[in-house]
Length: 353
Image 1 (cartoon, rainbow, N blue to C red):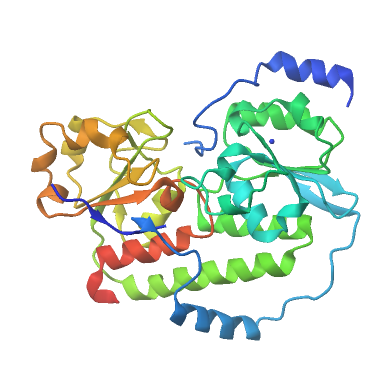
Image 2 (tube, rainbow, N blue to C red):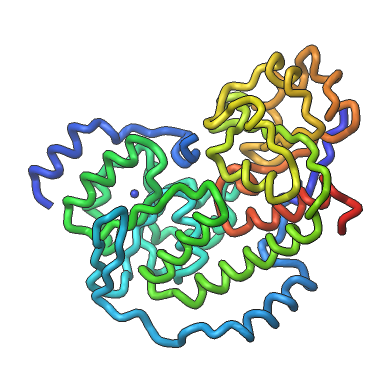
């Protein structure tokens, strides 16, 4: 069986006591899974870069700096940032990736440790030893977070424990940006715009948004009106978890749809990630299967399926349409998901490009 590989690409003592009582300080390998392949070069290809640069010259971006104190409406509550943040704590992987895209790493004081893992994060190389690395958003220790003297906290509320932690952190007097789950490109755009404002990096945020939309629109035009092949995405959700069927609450669902594919999460009524079984996969019998590796080049978490009886009889396997990417390309939200859309679109619709 041949796997075709594409280009890979987280007050007062009463508050602290209450936080500790929540019991949310244990580690968790699935710290950034949204509720619910050599590495590709982050930049657009040369032709796209030229077009993007030309388009950006036409885009009028403000040269004015953000004025502080800055008040942002978040979930019906105003969050006031008194000064330009210089000790930022990004407590979720998706938020950390975006912060490292927008801000000088010297302004970052604390990050989720997964942001320093090159298998999970595109910006791992920017994480220096001066930045404190902590357990991820589902395993937050709010008491410890407050001890780092951060002047801005940024996190994505994707799990109940994250929501509990954010409620406690909001009472600690440190400005907290609670971002919506990055499960669509529209939400990604909104989150980048919020972060651009909060960090005084609005121009950089708008440039990234423009680049993402340019890539998506190029694919949209190319695949418009094309028949949509059925697609199933299978991935571990942490090291050693084994394979899961990834549902519609994850960014991979939109990646497949934007690439002109028919994601079978709909047909299987999958919202959140669900343990994969051969029975379910055989029932779905997709035209394409996308396998995601937790560590690049390591298929161990997927072998219980790919070596199981019945795998070789699947339509995707028979037609050599099983393809391997990495979790950072497709499972975790980041600006380079737009590149994955382009890669998959060329796979699903080779004659459209």
